[in-house]
Length: 140
Image (cartoon, rainbow, N blue to C red; front, side, top):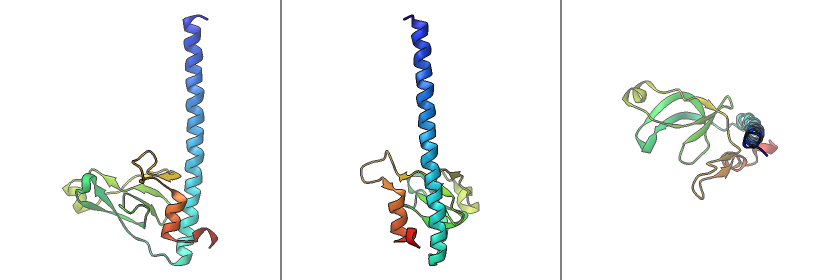
């Protein structure tokens, strides 16, 4: 087999693998998005009061208002879901003006496992996180 043919085959294999990974990640995000929508509906029905979500500065350096209401998904308040069912990472570099004016974080596609790839004990399945916030939410 010639080097250029081998290189083409390897490049094709890498492309196919990347497409498969992207499709798998997209399917996981889609499942997590549906889960958050179901949770928000159950939380409203159950009367679980949303709170004002804030963004924390990196390293615990201050907070900034977001104008969003919802529920924190992590104990450290680094992730949340809005009352619209949108997922937010609630940490960012914030400056003095951000603290005064507020900041609007970007919606992110939610993971099925919060903190995946982090230190031991920092990852938790999204379903378990939502059960902690509202036990039995799936049966409501």
